[in-house]
Amino acid sequence: MIRVTVADDQPIVRAGIAAILAAEPGLRVVDQCGDGETAVRQALDLRPDVAVLDVRMPGLDGVAATARVTAAAPEVRVLLLTSFGLDEYVFGALRAGASGFLLKTAEPQRVVDAVRVVAAGDALLDPAVTRRLIDHYAAAPGGSPGSAPPAALTPRETEVLVQVARGRSNAEIARELSLSPATVKDHVAVILRKLNVRDRVQAAIAAYETGLVRPGVR
Picture 1 (cartoon, rainbow, N blue to C red):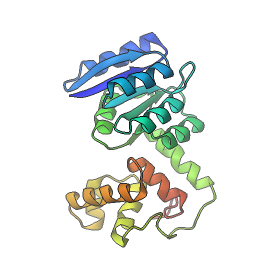
Picture 2 (cartoon, helix red, strand yellow; picture 1 turned 90 degrees about the vertical axis):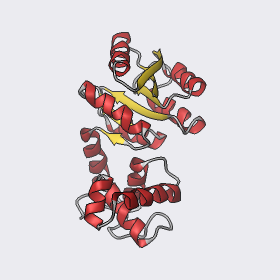
Picture 3 (cartoon, rainbow, N blue to C red; picture 1 turned 45 degrees about the horizontal axis):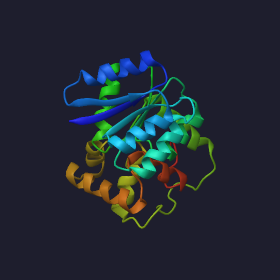
């Protein structure tokens, strides 16, 4: 059973999200609230598998709440929902440790799937958010393609990290590098540990920031 908390300052939206999730087999909404401070307390007291947070909430916003939750309870995965695809929210959320970021225009099933994905320890970004992330690094100064890996990765781990940064799944990486999916999964786990990051999104950011990967370069 995946235990979920929901925080949104709009009661109708909050109730709708909770109802969608509660109707799904294997998901249980354990609490709801309408502000960031309460969302943090819920996450720390209840230790849900996933905390679904609105970005814009009174007092403590969703990005700041994410940072506090992930620092104090790293086992709690955070999925942020927002009506605004603005860059400052996207990058702030990712740096704060969010495991997922979806626009509220997403289909209900997409939200359900996102909760399952982040609960499993993976990461998920709305396609529009992914484009913003890539555009950001395309415009930013950085290292050149082929720069040194951001940590003491083996050549094979570096190859896998490059594929992760390009948004490829384990199955796609396995086909690209002629490896088994299980081997790719093991490599990804080692990469996350060596980079000291929570998930694939954070690993991708590290690859872009160091210049190991540049947008548009294959």
